[in-house]
Length: 96
Image (tube, rainbow, N blue to C red):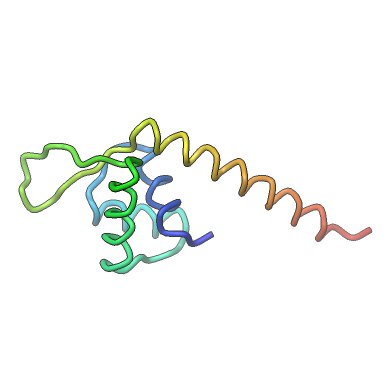
């Protein structure tokens, strides 16, 4: 699973993070390194859809983001879909 939007939402489900912290978290839990263009493009799309929102920070160089209720609901739906796919694939891979 390498959809940047889902990876970002999964990272933010743990708590508020700025871009670099999300990149490092995703690398840790998914083994995928997102480039800055991919990361910030996905952040922009998620923000436009209302799934994440920027929050105030004392550090003007880093802008943290927070998962919104709509983002949490979207992540929940996506995870249920992925779970069905994983369960189906796993059962089909088992020897008969």
